[in-house]
Image (tube, rainbow, N blue to C red; front, side, top):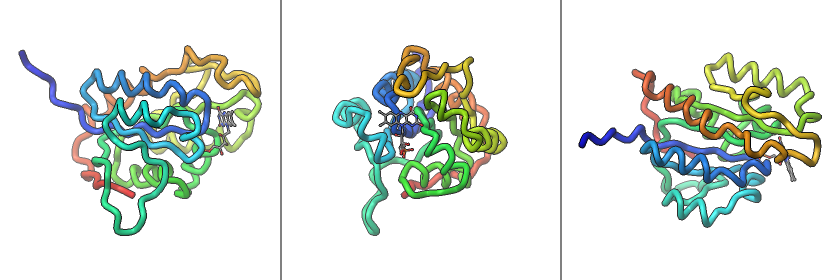
Length: 195
Ligand SMILES: Cc1cc2nc3c(=O)[nH]c(=O)nc-3n(C[C@H](O)[C@H](O)[C@H](O)COP(=O)(O)O)c2cc1C
C-alpha cells in the first residue's frame, strides 16, 4: 500500500480565548493527515489549554516564551502555521509587526520565509466592532494570510459569551486552508528553526 509522505511540520499558535480549550481537536485532525504538530501559545493562551495533554498528544513541549540566548531550538522548523483562536490583541500586534511574544515572533518571521498561514480571529461581538481589527484583518489578507473571519466561519457571542458558538469553530477549515497552500507552495526560502 502507498503511504502518503508527511506534509511536514505544523505550528498551531494559540491565544488567550476560551476557544483555545478545544485546540486538541485541530491537533488530532492534522495528525490524521500526517502532520507533525507543535503547539505554541501566548502567555495568556497558556492559561486556557491543558499543557500536559497537548504535550502528550504532540510529543513536543508546549512553548510560550522565547528561549534564552544560547539555548538550543527544541522544535523542528515549521512548514505551515495556524493561529487559532487568534485574539484581537495578537491580530493587531501581528499586523503592526510587533514581536513581544514568541507567537508574534514566529508569525513575523514566517512572512519572510513565506510560510503558509491560516488564522481564525475570535472575540466577542462588541470588541469586534473596533476599527483596528478590521484594518488588521484586511492587511493580513493583503499579505496572503488565509483569514477565516465572519459569520460564515463562526458567529461571535456577546461579552462574557465568547464560547457560545464553540461547536462552530472552524478547526477543519483552518487546516484545509494551509493543507491546500503547502501543496501549491514551491520555491520558497527554507525555514530555519526559529526563536
Ligand atoms: C475569560 C476570558 C476570555 C477572553 N476571550 C477572548 C476572546 O475570545 N477573544 C479576544 O480577542 N480576547 C479575549 N480575551 C482577552 C485576551 O485574553 C487578552 O486581550 C489577552 O491580552 C490576549 O493576549 P494574547 O493575544 O497574547 O493571547 C479574554 C480574556 C478572558 C479573561
